[in-house]
Length: 403
Image 1 (cartoon, rainbow, N blue to C red):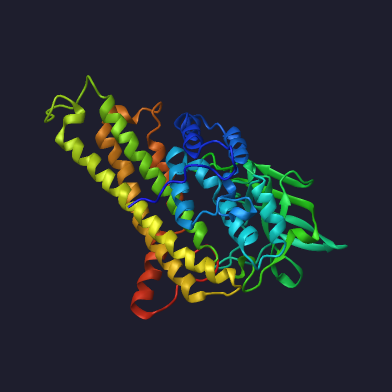
Image 2: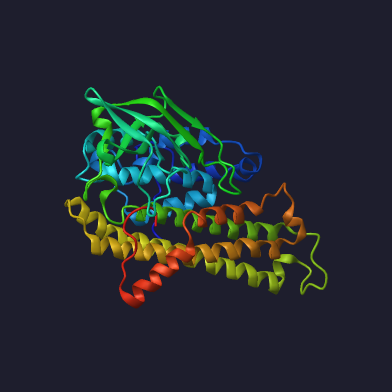
């Protein structure tokens, strides 16, 4: 089962989405190997206004469903998982602050998103030991009618490509808040120091905030129905990560096919056929990868469907905890399934290609590295334990933080 493709990006006369994705795919393996940051691609994404997919059409968006959004994420990730992942925090920003009817200054942020601007995130602090997150050392200090923002954030995925960044911080009396400031504002420094094994081009580095001015309409304090106060508020963010992993698997399949069809002269000893593409053993492996990719796509899109009811309830200003729990449950299950399928398939790719497929110039190991890095964002065993406890005892999944 596959979703109907979105054939055009939001704005009239913009590049066709197929052409945009094909452009993203060009040179992706080389960029990953040589660590060439894709700033030009994000300029084209701005021009296409791809980031406005989920905005209503009346507000300059495409009015895309979650299923359509996740299909785009998977397709982008198949082209380049770095680009798809770097947009994750933008799409979650849109849901919290540009689409949500209860969001303060929603009209302002919707207009900014509709213009093509992109948003990053600065959330994680290495110094924060609290289970479930929170307890930010980054602070918002009142100054006149506005605020001053100070702190250091890590894993700021996508921020280096973004026009604005949402910064999680502690306000007076420790109240959790989000400050949304331009990335070029004085006192903001974005450092590309991410050195992970995979997802090397996502801009997931360190961001410094030194006495940064935040205006009154740029700060949002959490409540049970605003910002990060919702129960299971991070479900979409986690599903997008899994969607990127599914996109990696699509790329594994396309590379497996390309490997076999390109092998004209050499084959392994004692093979069952003179042509690699005609070899039953290798055909079986490609068939298994193909089935795994189909299952991964279907699993992600089924989980995306569960988010529709959550959005409908939250558009009414309701918490919808039970509905949100069902979506979180589906997303957790999707992660476990898709991670396993992709990591196995990324390894089996080398059974198809043989020793020559391990050449650094081919950079085929990027698929496993990228999938392994994405899968490590939150522990699979924790998901499995929580799902098992829910099935056995009814203990709900963790409701806050990046579970």
